[in-house]
Structures are given as structure tokens and as C-alpha cells.
Length: 265
Image 1 (cartoon, rainbow, N blue to C red):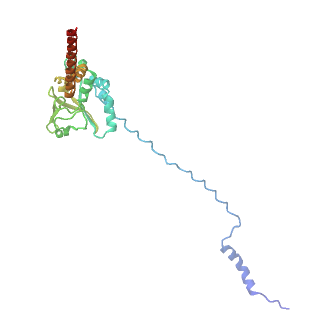
Image 2: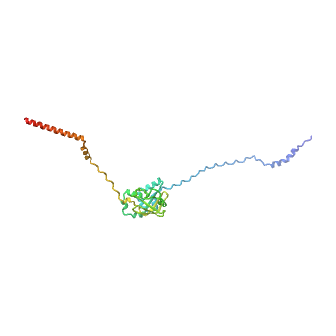
Image 3: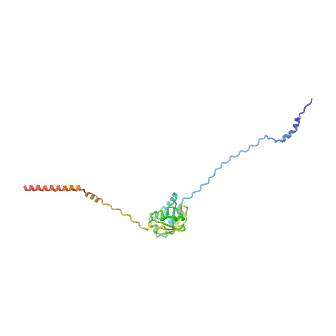
């Protein structure tokens, strides 16, 4: 019996090693699993610390830092005007201007002058050195005379006149003293402090005040009542006259009757 050979099989068998090495071997081993990633840490934004606000303006601290204003500081504290200035700077928008006499200016006053002032006059003296608005050196020529101070607006007793030539020199007069503006002690566009070489003395301290009008004398109460009682009407006078006549008639009748009786007796 003749066996039939399979040509395809005989051809395929020699090619099998070639086919096996010509393709990549697929590994059945499982590759290691990737390590889990760590969760991202939550980052919190760091808020910068707030910048501390500047401390409120303190007029005493300003003058102490400048130096040479011991007497003025004492008066500001004694009259409580220092607290008033600090409060106004916090509550108003117009600002303030202070003319600050140094210790040399106060020492040039007549000896005993400050001690001769009462509390009200000391307060008025300090208020006379304050303008109720902020005035820069270059703006003094825009003011209208007499300039209003915080002491009041009486043009005869509290007048302050200021002249300026473009801010180069500022002169002031109260009618008692003439003052030249010195250097700038402090300014922050809300408070201006200028040194002056003399104390601003208002005329109110040196001009005699008119006496108060005397009260009208009161009328005595007794004389008023008496005059009221003595005042009568024409009718009252007529009635009084009639009574008088009647009394006279009665008297004459009585006399006549007595006469008749005497004759008959």
C-alpha cells in the first residue's frame, strides 16, 4: 500500500522555528501594579498680617518730639485744649492750624502775666492760637482779615490780621503784638503747627469791657397799694359829698330841737 505524503505538512515543519522567533513572545506574567499616588496636600493661602494703622494724631506728642514747648504743653493740658484738638482731628474734615509759641516767647511776657489769668482767660488765650481749618504756608494769602480763630469772632476784641507775600514771610498782628511766623513744626495735611516768636495776645485782655447796664429800680409795693387805694371815681366822690350834707342836716335839726325845748322850759 502506498502511503501518500502531505507536502504542506512537510513544508510547514521547517518554517515553524522561524515563525516562532519572528514574533515577540507574549509573557503571561502579570506586570507589577503601579504604586498608588499619594493624595495632594491641601495648601492653605497665607493671609498677610494687616498693616497696623497709624496712631491718631496727638498734639502733645508732636510738641514733645519737637522740643522747646514746655509752657505751651502745660497750658494745653491745664485747659484741656489738647484733648479738644485731638478729638476735632478725629471727627472733622477741615483740619486745624496751631500757632505754637516756644518757651522763649512765653518768657518774654511780663512777669506774672500767665498767673494773673483766670481759667477762662487761659482757655481763650490758647484758643486764640488756633484756626478752625488747615492752612498751608502757601495759602495764608488767601485768608480774609480779620481771621477767625477758635476764641471767637469779635472783630474789636479778638481780631487777628494776617499778611503774607506768597508764603515767603507771614506776619500777624493782634492790635497788641506783631508776630512773624517761624518754621513748620509739623504738618500732615490735616494739622499744621507753626512756631511763632511771640505769644498772640488778644485785645480782649487789655481793653476795658463796658460796664453792664444797671437794673431798673423796683417800685415799692406799699406806695403802689396806697396810690391804688387813694384813687377814686367821680361817683365815689359824689356819694361822699351827699353823706356829708346829710350829716350836717341832722346836726342842725338836733340843735333846733334843743333850742325849742330850752325856750319852753
